[in-house]
Image (cartoon, rainbow, N blue to C red; front, side, top):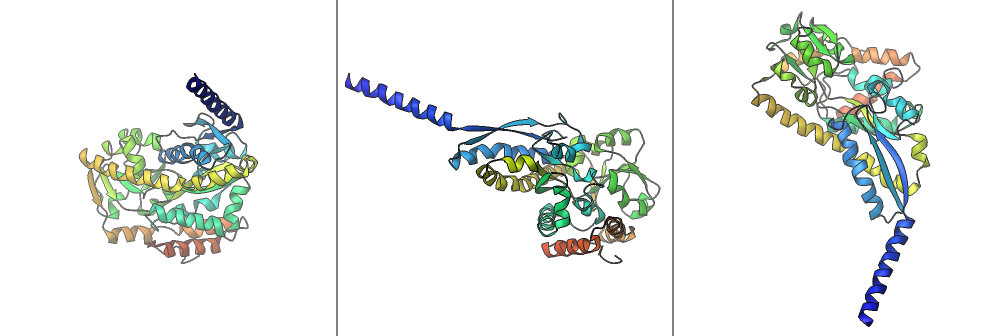
Length: 357
């Protein structure tokens, strides 16, 4: 009887402790969203870091707070043209921002599109962009002006050439219709090719129907759409990896969170870039193996031809500087600082974009 009484009392105590703990827990509801689906590396990276790790870290710290995530990916709340507006207006609390689609609001974030053939290492990209954000008030202001908190950059693998014909020298591209997205088009025009502005979802059909004869694209984006089926000649040119967005939060919402929650979330949010790089590099490696297995003809453009390509381009870095200087920005100094940071981080530019600024 005595043992039974003790057992009942122990169970009651355990129930009281569990109930008390549950009563002490406070739930914070947050929305995290993207214009793209979770199969995309920069979206998967958000799920794998902030969503997957925050509550575990809060629990480990003994915090009473827990996050209830409303995950809204794949354009459920907004499309790719409105990513910064969604953060600014609080349509989402956290999310991916595609800065490449914001040349007017965030021109400094697109500096790497103005300096192709500079660096192929995604890790260097993120390191340099984080340095520019830390040291340049102008870089930070672009996020502050949009009511946004920058955590870390989204980077790609290096851009390569996918064509319906073999490419061993630059002259092979003359007169050809080459598809690319936005600013990347300036990388091809000096070769006598015709730039056709298009987006990834249209590339396959455009090549299949003759609208284009080739594409400039990153392998991690090309393989999922089976681009090598219609452009079986894959030429590794290594035009450069670029940062084209970032993981961010609505500033007002971020500052409204309890300090201990922000202290836990900030280092996890900073892990985003490393996770994105890991996914991108893994997919690039597997993508190359997939293309080879499917019979794609993989080659590397000779180093001399690559250098010719870089040198043949108009000085788009100067155009970037001139355009942003008109907006009152210290664009020349920012370009000088950026290229110096790239070299210090280990990049070996095929062209010195600071010449002629």
